[in-house]
Length: 125
Image 1 (tube, rainbow, N blue to C red):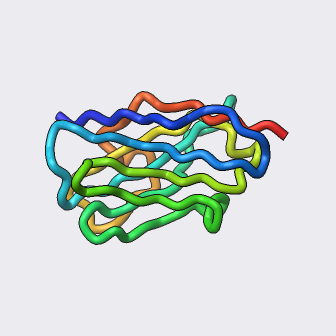
Image 2 (cartoon, rainbow, N blue to C red; image 1 turned 180 degrees about the vertical axis):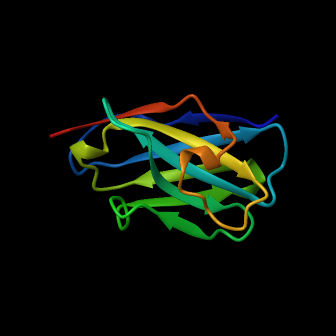
Protein backbone atom coordinates (compact mmCIF):
# COMPACT_ATOMS: atom_id res chain seq x y z
CA UNK A 1 0.00 0.00 0.00
CA UNK A 2 1.27 3.45 -0.93
CA UNK A 3 1.70 5.99 1.84
CA UNK A 4 2.11 9.71 1.24
CA UNK A 5 3.40 12.23 3.78
CA UNK A 6 3.35 15.98 3.12
CA UNK A 7 5.63 18.51 4.77
CA UNK A 8 6.79 22.08 4.32
CA UNK A 9 3.61 23.99 5.08
CA UNK A 10 3.56 27.10 7.21
CA UNK A 11 2.70 30.79 7.34
CA UNK A 12 4.06 33.40 4.95
CA UNK A 13 3.21 36.93 3.88
CA UNK A 14 1.89 37.85 0.47
CA UNK A 15 4.62 37.51 -2.14
CA UNK A 16 6.57 34.95 -0.16
CA UNK A 17 7.52 31.40 -1.06
CA UNK A 18 7.14 27.90 0.34
CA UNK A 19 8.27 24.50 -0.84
CA UNK A 20 6.08 21.50 -0.10
CA UNK A 21 7.35 17.94 -0.13
CA UNK A 22 5.47 14.68 -0.59
CA UNK A 23 7.38 11.58 0.45
CA UNK A 24 5.98 8.32 -0.94
CA UNK A 25 6.61 4.85 0.43
CA UNK A 26 5.30 1.33 -0.07
CA UNK A 27 6.52 0.74 -3.63
CA UNK A 28 8.62 2.26 -6.38
CA UNK A 29 6.61 4.44 -8.72
CA UNK A 30 6.59 3.86 -12.47
CA UNK A 31 3.46 4.59 -14.52
CA UNK A 32 1.94 6.80 -11.86
CA UNK A 33 0.58 10.29 -11.65
CA UNK A 34 1.19 12.45 -8.60
CA UNK A 35 -0.79 15.56 -7.92
CA UNK A 36 -1.30 18.37 -5.45
CA UNK A 37 -4.75 19.48 -4.38
CA UNK A 38 -5.83 22.15 -1.93
CA UNK A 39 -8.92 22.92 0.09
CA UNK A 40 -9.57 26.33 1.58
CA UNK A 41 -11.90 27.00 4.49
CA UNK A 42 -15.47 26.50 3.33
CA UNK A 43 -14.36 25.61 -0.19
CA UNK A 44 -14.23 22.46 -2.27
CA UNK A 45 -11.00 20.61 -2.84
CA UNK A 46 -9.39 21.70 -6.10
CA UNK A 47 -6.59 20.54 -8.35
CA UNK A 48 -3.37 22.56 -8.16
CA UNK A 49 -0.66 20.73 -10.11
CA UNK A 50 0.34 17.25 -11.20
CA UNK A 51 3.24 15.35 -12.70
CA UNK A 52 3.78 12.02 -14.47
CA UNK A 53 6.39 10.04 -12.58
CA UNK A 54 8.01 8.51 -15.65
CA UNK A 55 8.58 11.35 -18.11
CA UNK A 56 7.95 14.39 -15.93
CA UNK A 57 5.02 15.79 -17.93
CA UNK A 58 3.22 18.41 -15.85
CA UNK A 59 -0.18 20.01 -15.61
CA UNK A 60 -1.19 23.14 -13.68
CA UNK A 61 -4.36 24.88 -12.68
CA UNK A 62 -4.71 28.28 -14.34
CA UNK A 63 -4.76 29.96 -10.93
CA UNK A 64 -1.20 28.87 -10.12
CA UNK A 65 0.45 28.62 -13.52
CA UNK A 66 3.59 30.74 -13.63
CA UNK A 67 3.85 30.86 -9.84
CA UNK A 68 3.99 27.20 -8.78
CA UNK A 69 6.33 24.49 -10.04
CA UNK A 70 5.89 20.77 -9.48
CA UNK A 71 8.81 18.36 -9.68
CA UNK A 72 9.87 14.93 -8.49
CA UNK A 73 12.98 13.06 -7.42
CA UNK A 74 12.69 9.47 -8.59
CA UNK A 75 15.53 8.21 -6.41
CA UNK A 76 13.86 9.57 -3.28
CA UNK A 77 10.26 8.81 -4.26
CA UNK A 78 9.47 12.41 -3.42
CA UNK A 79 7.46 15.08 -5.20
CA UNK A 80 7.77 18.80 -4.58
CA UNK A 81 5.64 21.87 -5.05
CA UNK A 82 7.58 25.12 -5.18
CA UNK A 83 5.17 27.98 -4.50
CA UNK A 84 6.27 31.52 -5.32
CA UNK A 85 4.46 34.86 -5.30
CA UNK A 86 1.95 33.51 -2.82
CA UNK A 87 -1.40 35.24 -2.41
CA UNK A 88 -3.99 35.11 0.38
CA UNK A 89 -6.22 33.09 -1.95
CA UNK A 90 -3.60 30.34 -1.84
CA UNK A 91 -4.38 29.75 1.84
CA UNK A 92 -5.55 26.16 2.18
CA UNK A 93 -4.70 22.69 3.34
CA UNK A 94 -2.55 21.16 0.62
CA UNK A 95 -2.84 17.45 -0.11
CA UNK A 96 -0.58 15.14 -2.05
CA UNK A 97 -2.24 12.41 -4.11
CA UNK A 98 -1.12 9.54 -6.35
CA UNK A 99 -2.73 7.21 -8.85
CA UNK A 100 -1.48 4.13 -10.70
CA UNK A 101 -1.32 3.20 -14.38
CA UNK A 102 -1.90 6.62 -15.84
CA UNK A 103 -0.68 8.12 -19.10
CA UNK A 104 -1.77 11.63 -18.16
CA UNK A 105 -2.30 13.74 -15.05
CA UNK A 106 -5.89 13.54 -13.78
CA UNK A 107 -7.38 16.75 -12.42
CA UNK A 108 -10.31 15.37 -10.42
CA UNK A 109 -10.19 14.21 -6.82
CA UNK A 110 -12.01 10.96 -7.59
CA UNK A 111 -9.26 9.93 -10.02
CA UNK A 112 -6.65 9.53 -7.28
CA UNK A 113 -6.41 6.46 -5.08
CA UNK A 114 -3.81 7.46 -2.49
CA UNK A 115 -3.82 10.60 -0.35
CA UNK A 116 -1.65 12.21 2.28
CA UNK A 117 -2.94 13.84 5.47
CA UNK A 118 -2.39 17.40 4.26
CA UNK A 119 -0.27 20.35 5.32
CA UNK A 120 -1.54 23.84 6.13
CA UNK A 121 -0.42 26.83 4.07
CA UNK A 122 -1.43 30.27 5.31
CA UNK A 123 -0.74 33.46 3.36
CA UNK A 124 -1.40 36.78 5.08
CA UNK A 125 -1.78 40.15 3.39
